[in-house]
Image 1 (cartoon, rainbow, N blue to C red):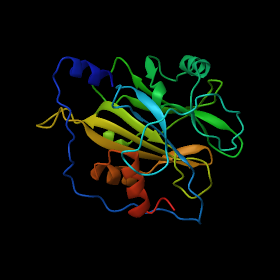
Image 2 (image 1 turned 135 degrees about the horizontal axis):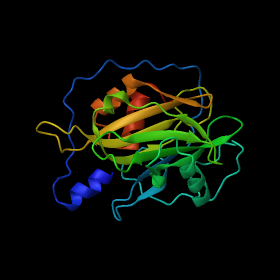
Image 3 (image 1 turned 135 degrees about the vertical axis):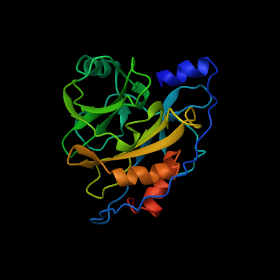
Image 4 (image 1 turned 60 degrees about the vertical axis):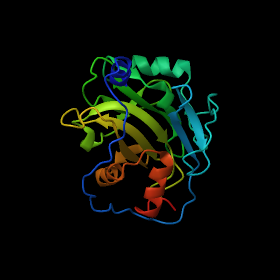
Length: 248
């Protein structure tokens, strides 16, 4: 995101979307353990009018849905599956002091407090390395709301050699059929950094499944979503539901 603002200001890049030409990987197998109601989805997305990011509640998969501000008041730390919410300034300060790696900047508009099991909530924190703009410097950590570090989420391995351009959106649907706790769908943009399309951002999707308070990713699913050039939460959920059978 630092790289994006710097290059855009210099007029060096034209933002176009790369339609990936790689062949589709085999469809990922999805475990279905029973019928579970879909948890309400909360999304953070870019506001095209202001250039800022705002949280929105997704009531449908309509890509033209109206953006609306989500409530950001603190919720009790009792996972009654309250709405995911943005971190408070106090929580952001406490987490910043306990980041496992120095020099990282929290992307606060895409970091949320979410219920992770039937007893507690935690902060899902997305950050970037401010001084390292030419690599995949995206990192996602799980913290207690008092700032205590819990887990670093695994990376999307396919993006390890690409250059982070932008974090577009994050949502919290129920994907894994193992309970009402939210899973995570993350939409980003990357550049390959070499070749004729080196400076063309393209969409990259990553899912994280909540397994008892620990988040894991599924690389085959990530690659399939990316090969489909999924650019919106609505499209991601459509593919997950109708093609990969993740959603009921």
